[in-house]
Amino acid sequence: MVKVGILGLGTVGGSVAKILQKNKKIIEARSGKKIVVKAGVALEDKDFDFPVTKDPMDVINDPEIDIIVEVMGGIDFPYKLVKQALLNGKAVVTANKAMLAYHRYELQEIAGDIPLMYEASTAGGIPIIGALRNGLSANHIESIMGIMNGTSNFILTKMIQEGAAYEDVLKEAQELGYAEADPTFDVGGFDASHKLLILASIAFGIDAKPEDILIEGIEGIMQTDVEFAKDFEYVIKLLGVAKRVNGGVELRVHPVMIPQKSMIAKVDGVMNAVMVQGDCVGETLYYGAGAGGDATASAVIADIIDIVRGNTNPMLGYKKSLESGLKLLSKEEITSQYYLRLSVEDKKGVLAQITNLLSDLDISIEAMMQKPDSDQDEYVEILFITHKCKERSIQEAIAKLEQLSVVKNKIGMIRIEQ
Ligand code: NDP
Ligand code: HSE
Image (cartoon, rainbow, N blue to C red):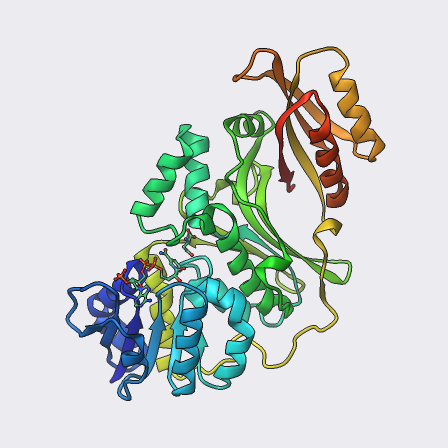
C-alpha cells in the first residue's frame, strides 16, 4: 500500500482525494498497488474520511507517508514545504507552477533521484510535460506556442462569442474553480508565463524567471479590438510563445491576433492547446481542459501512479545543463506584426501626422480602418496593422504617438501571429 499526504484540499486537492477513492480499482490495476490518502492539510475544517490538519509539517514529517501532493498554491511557503518533504525522502507531486517558475532548478538539485513530478502544473489535464520530457525527447525543440491559461481563454471566448462583460466572466471562472487565488495571475499573463518557463526549461534548458520575459495580459482588450479582429478574420487569444531564433530563445506571453482558420484559434472556453515543433517529429498539438479540479487531478494522479510504478526520470528530463549555447533573447529583439488602436481628434492632418511618425521609425502599414469613437463625437478611432518590425521600434512609436496632443488615452497594441 502507498500512502499519500495532500497539502491543500481546495479545488484540486479535493478532486484528487475524491478521484483516488472513486477510481481506486482502475488506479490500483494501473499502478500495481493500493493508493490511499493518509492525511490532508487545509486551513478550514473539511469533511474527508482521513484526518485533516492545519499544519503541513504534521504530514511532511509523518514517517508512514510516501508521497506528498502539494496543491496549496503560493511560492515561497510551498517551496519550503516541498524542499523539506524531499529532504525527508518523500516523493512529491505538485500542480504549483508559480512555485516552479521561481524554484524549479533548486528543487531539481534537492530532489536528485527522488521523484518530483509536476504534470498538472502546465495546461491542467493535458499531458504536455510528459510529452516534452519523454515522447519528444529525441528532438531539438524549435518552438512551443499555445493557450496556457484556461481562465483568460474562457474570458476571451465569452467576450468574443457572446459580447459578455469582462468582470462577469471572470467571476464565473472563479466560481468554476478555474482562476488562481489571485486572478490577476490569470488575466495579467503571469500564470501563463509560469507555465511557459517550465516548458522552456525542459525544451531548451533555459533558466529564466518571470521578470526576465515579456508578459502582457488581457485586461486592456476592448470590444473595438474584438470587432476589428473579426473584420480582418483574426481571433484574439492569450498565447505563450517559446521560439528558437538566431541561436537564442524568445520567451513571451501576450494577447495575439491569430488567423481564424488556425487550429489554436478554434480552442475555446477553458480549453488549452499547446503546439510543439520538433526537428524530427515536425508539428505536434496537445489539446484539453486547462483548468478545473477534476481535469487537474487527472494529471496529479497520473504522476502518483507513475511514481508508484517506479519512474525515477530526472525532474526536467535531463540532469545537467541542456544546451548551454542558447540565450534568452531580449524583449526588444522580438519581431512581429502589430495591431494599433488610437483614439484621435477628428480633424485635418492628424492621420498624416501619425503615418509620418511611423514612417520615420521605418514602420510600414499593411491595413488601416477608421471608426467613430463611441465615447466622444470629436474623436475617431484609427486602427492599424503594421508590417513586421522590431518590438523596440513599435514601443518607441507608441511612446511618441502618446505624446501627440491629438491622441487621446493610451494606445492599444496587440501583436499578430500568422
Ligand atoms: P484552492 O485555493 O482551491 O485550494 C488551496 C488549498 O490549500 C485550500 O484547501 C486551502 O485551505 C489550503 N491552503 C492554502 N494555504 C494554506 C496554508 N498556509 N496552510 C494550510 N493550508 C493552506 O486552490 P486550487 O486547488 O485551485 O489550486 C491549488 C494549486 O494548484 C495552485 O498552485 C494552483 O496554481 C494549482 N492549479 C490549479 C488549477 C485549477 O484549475 N484550480 C489547475 C492547475 C494547477 P482552505 O480550504 O482551508 O482555504
Ligand atoms: N488558473 C489556471 C488557469 C489554472 O486558468 O489556467 C490552471 O493552471
